[in-house]
Image (tube, rainbow, N blue to C red; front, side, top):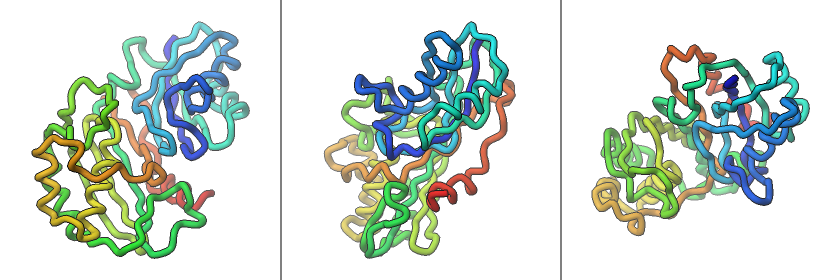
Length: 266
């Protein structure tokens, strides 16, 4: 039997999603608990492997099991054993040909950037931070060239395992909300560190270090060494994974409410 789960987590206490020898990853915690619930070895597969310090409001995973358990065992039962900062929100059986990663048709990330002279206090490890006021209009102008199908090698980590750097960035929205700037990215898929690398370069532009046209130069260069360093993982959230309606998965979570709760620490 194949089971699919929807979960959320605060990534600040973990070394990323993917299992590590020191057992410090979200996957390590989840697989350990599911193994206890199933009374057999469980290995999960996720929709998107988040880096250390990156959060998720709508991660999707699947696993196979021969254990016969009520669905509440995979939600409330698992949540009773999981460490703080990780929660399974829903569970349901799915066809054996469903794959959390390869069946996904799109992913959405949001980056929250605190833009004020003082560093974050209550929002520590929940937002990125830049001390000088950023020109959001310049950042929006720079971002326009990113929409569409492109080779994102200039924003790809050297250790990225994706077969191709060519991805389709469907949306990139940038909005100031008081002292914070919200950047929302939607694509068919992302190369490793793509969002954080784009955010880093947009901050360079917003701070006046480079003109908006520099972004297109970077994109066309396909040269990672020319772009800005990756921005902090603290402000990055996986907020949605898209699937064909035929899979009949639960509707997307209330992203705005989830983001607000994460930022407020409640």
